[in-house]
Length: 212
Length: 212
Image (cartoon, rainbow over all chains, first blue to last red; front, side, top):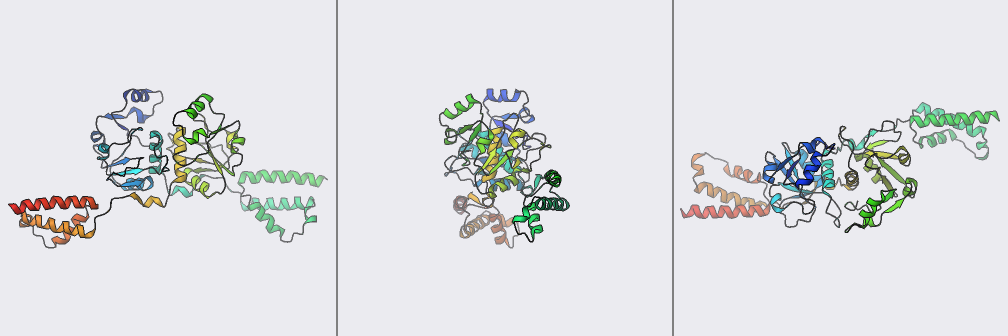
């Protein structure tokens, strides 16, 4: 919850020992320290304009709409006002009584043979889907800075010189080799730093070739 | 891993006691039972054509491209051939040496104040992003069957009758009320089952109104 910026944890009849230990643990995040305990689901979700249940099972008997997480998270984001996401116990999930507080239910798209999920992992996956960003999906956070064309050209020239000095062209007829070499270097998809490193290597080789 | 259909778990120098216990636990999934242990990252990723690292930290010193999970997962899906997703220990993450085996690194978009994530939750979120389905995002898995128009019309007629019998129209001038009632009922966004329930309620009320 804390990882994804969701801070309002409300527990209904938690197992006391585990909850007290987790809350008082060194480094317990602000989420645990401010968590509130309620006796009933009704009290816990009071004040929420949307209550969404979660389910791993088949729930064929269920009368509520059941959405895949991708759909459900979109519907939640479109909703104004405070929304609650309701998780059942790891062992048995939400009861039909719990579900009666929900407008609809969402389900993580696991494989059919292994639907039951660890509770903490379910929460993490649901909250991640709620905050994931379609817009950002296409953009690198911190990519390598690509080498500029002038650097690529210098590399190509040095490489051509090294090839000529080493006698490479003696064995292969290479008209149009300037373009071929440029394409060869472009396919390396060089970052600026690596281009500088390669240039240093070529200069050293050229120096040695010219010595001989 | 098992939830999301990823079955090839490879561990590098795992903490022996924990691993042996988890593997032999009753109900340990096929993933744990078939997990393999290696001495080095190099041996573990041998045979993979793509190795992707994961990082929670800032990693400003890192020279590898760093993508948000949304971007990284898309790049992984586009890749042919076996791909490895490399996770570090929960405490310290991947070392620079580990990272040198990776083509690039991806990062779960947590909030900046709380980047460090539980290992199991990180794995779940990454694998979920790999299998999530943009196409399915728009579709309900199992929505309620909407009430057909003929049912909505019958409801409207019964409701109009109940309003007339109860004297509702005596107090409100309602030209165009047929359309208004239909819109009122459409806004209920009724499923077929609920429409039948409402029809039963109205019939009962009508029966009582006609008695009087």
